[in-house]
Image (cartoon, rainbow, N blue to C red; front, side):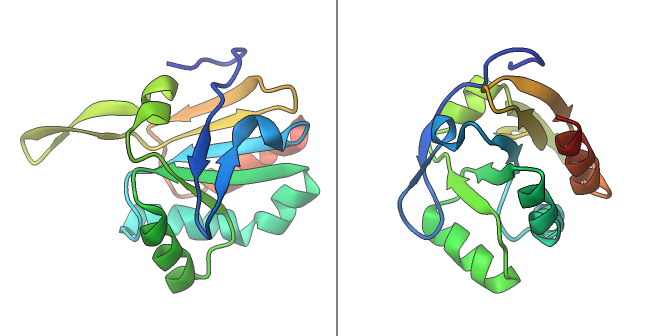
Length: 153
């Protein structure tokens, strides 16, 4: 589990639109790394739309927004087209990055236990250190709270 003050684990993952995204290559800018369970589901769609709506504000705060789930890049591309998304979406099909950030957890849904991604967000400064962590995120108002934190760095 990654904690505030620690170095953010680096990764290089396939991304929407082709190519890869490497966390350390985004320095010295700040990064919002948000983990979400599944493309095109209600909460995940709202969260992605909220981050997209604020993308100009994040850019003005020298902050790149990256969403990460297990979905394939083809699924990410469909998700982006369908909802007009303007954030980077990375694919962690093997869950390695999710595990290193401590968001690959056991979930209990309708009495059935299974592994899945816990909705969580990490704000990473230009030096690669985690400055804020939001776990078990409630979507309403979340993108705005993250933007406020990014503006203070």
